[in-house]
Image 1: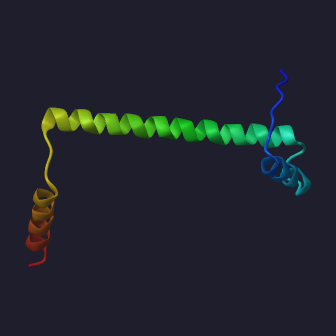
Image 2: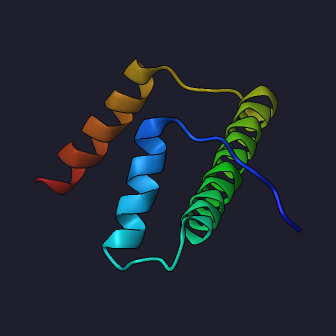
Image 3: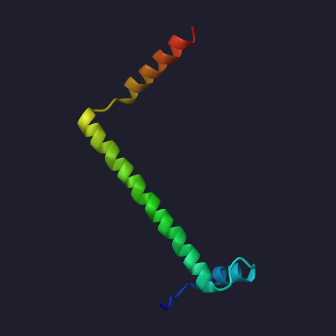
Length: 83
């Protein structure tokens, strides 16, 4: 499959520099590599959003604590173990 892509002059220079430095055989390889990175970034973003959704659902189901309550619990644990 062949697709033409228009790049800004800055991106085209970057892609050609990557080829010139020997990391890639041609600009198409640079673009494919960039798309794989974007694909992984998007997968991680979706996973992060799912984790946030789970946390919201958990807080809706089980409730939540204020920062003051959490800090008081942390202080109590520290005080208990520092004696």
